[in-house]
Length: 127
Image (cartoon, rainbow, N blue to C red):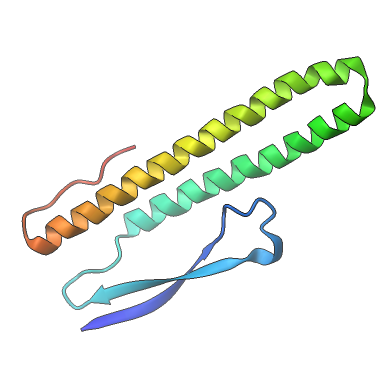
């Protein structure tokens, strides 16, 4: 017998998170201990929070770059080089987090499939 319950997950990819948007995901459980792995949800939540923090930081950095550009003061324009490099670094960090999430979720799905087939236990990849 399958039992479904709803879970809410904040949309961390919305840099403004306007209106506190959430999306509902369905989690299925069965009487055969096929509960959703809390470790996977924790990893996903941690990764999305990290992405949101980097996006928030980039939003502030972009505002500063725009203010510096509008001022047309040469020192402020020089500062933009470092700010843009920091923005680029945050984008690379976001890419890395999404890549890690993807690998971990693939490992989770693979592990669940192996366990369902009774082949044995596969360990979650440490990232």
